[in-house]
Amino acid sequence: GPALLFVKTSQGREEGRRFYACSACRDRKDCNFFQWEDEKVSETRLAAREEYNRNHQPSFTHRQNVDRYKNFVLLPLSKRRFCQECQQLLLPAEWENHSGHQFLCNITTVQLKSPSQLLYPLENKKTNAQYLFADRSCKFLLNLLIDLGFRRVLSVGTPRLHEMIQSKASEKEEFSVRSLLLDIDFRYSQFYTEDEFCHYNMFNHHFFGGEAAHETCRKFLHEENGERVIMVTDPPFGGLVEALASSFKKLMSMWRDTEKEGHDNKEMPMFWIFPYFFESRILDFFPSFSMMDYQVDYDNHALYKHGKTGRRQSPVRIFTNLTPSMIVLPEEEGYRFCTICQRYVSSGNQHCEICNSCTSKDGRRWKHCVLCKKCVKPSWFHCSSCNCCTLEKHSCEKTDVGCFVCGKAGHKRSACPSLSHT
Ligand code: SAH
Ligand code: ZN
Ligand code: ZN
Ligand code: ZN
Ligand code: ZN
Image (cartoon, rainbow, N blue to C red; front, side):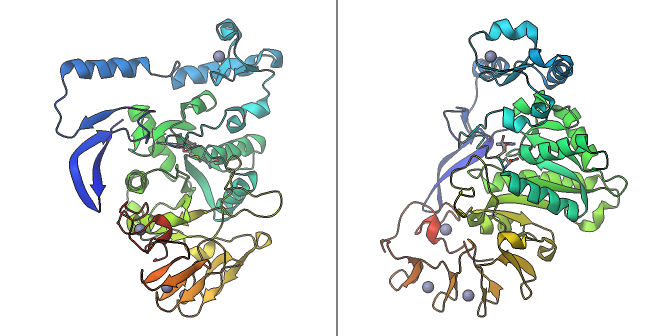
């Protein structure tokens, strides 16, 4: 799909020529596409690119994978093999081509219904950054959206949530929630039909399946029989918020356009799961959103999961355009309702009388600084030469690299003044 147009900045100033680079891969090692904005590309180079793309297509199309799956489930257990090296379900005639590869044998129906357990997580940080929800968090999300009355979930980069919904739906007839997965990980096309999975890039809103896939998504978003839709997304944290927001707005307008009356100018309900330090960036693009205190935990992320002994703090939160008071957080996991803020907060999050809000972002009790006129992390102190609160250990000279959060020079992400403004 389309590349993104980038510009190098230094000290907040634009510098040099603008260029196009791959939207999905933030590492040149994963995709080396590069083109100056004003560059003339020769016919030969265009042809070479097309040739390269042709040679890098997946070995089967989604349609072929669906047919293969149908044949696969007809096989007796003893003939159901999964090649771990190729990350592919194998039909008996193909075994020979994979001799020397590691197989998983006797693939059960239960395994086929939990592909996120069968496939290895693509953890390479700069492209897929596949971090799977811990069961606890996944169940919490699903129960929450069921309690809120949603019956359709557009799962954008949330394969584990999708799979939990799909397998419940196939087990219990009375379970009426449906899900459509949009993800760039094409391995999932082996397990889901074209109505259940679309190969999609959330950084440029590109449907690899073309108009037919677009139409699948449009149909899914059309709320028939009062079945309300919510979008849940958990993008790679290194992703550009700007690019993501632009795609999500396009998905929102697809939803809006499914209704002739135009949904009375309402927004498609959404949960955007992202670290708390992106709060101000997300609010820049979606002013109607607010950040919930719930800490989302992951299975394969050493930092973001519940330790055996007590809780490791995950920085990952839910951003939503639903009314905060409706998002009920579990008391048994240490959340309480603040009647003044009208939302659930971490038990450690004390209501500050001066700010008139529960100001903690990380679950710890924050303290109010009268000079900064806001609450700050408990470990910070007010530095009179920097004229703001920051870590005790810091050098007062300004840094010249731009801040990761707001892009401005003069401070690092941890000291970003926009972090706690809402
Ligand atoms: N916690 C989620 C997974 C989040 S990891 C769960 O358990 O369901 C990020 C997901 O986004 C992965 O599934 C990854 O394949 C997908 N992804 C990464 N880059 C993407 C892109 N450019 N477009 C669409 N999906 C992408
Ligand atoms: Zn193989
Ligand atoms: Zn305060
Ligand atoms: Zn201060
Ligand atoms: Zn900043």
